[in-house]
Figure 1 (cartoon, rainbow, N blue to C red):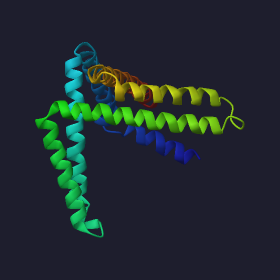
Figure 2: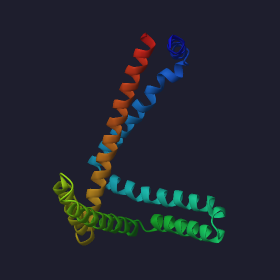
Figure 3: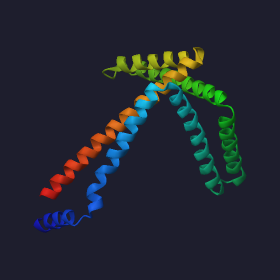
Length: 194
């Protein structure tokens, strides 16, 4: 037992300085994401443009994955065909940004509607067996209503909501990274002190 403790403490003392300083990486990333999130909050157009480019990059990465795994399929040409479809989608997203954003609104709306209905039905079925089923049912209905608003409401308003949600997500991620960096620093200081 004492040998394990001694070897662990010796390992901490022998860590390279760059490992002890790794808390700076999440700190810097967190600060940058916090700044980016604030820019996106105060510049909705930039947030909407960011959404479009996220779709483009997702399609490009999906195409790369489809091409890379085509040989694993029973018919490799299916993988190549899927990859080409993703590439065409990425090109269309770059050429027609309005179409891309409208498709994004429709996909989010349909996802919220279907997911909300499924959640409400599952909560309703579990009402006799589960405590707190009402909350799940209410959130399901709320998601379904949000989906209907996305699908049948103003696409511009829906894009603004998505851009604000993206900004809030980026801000929260930045704050989480900063908190993680400070926790790593505190733990590293405690290990170094002992």
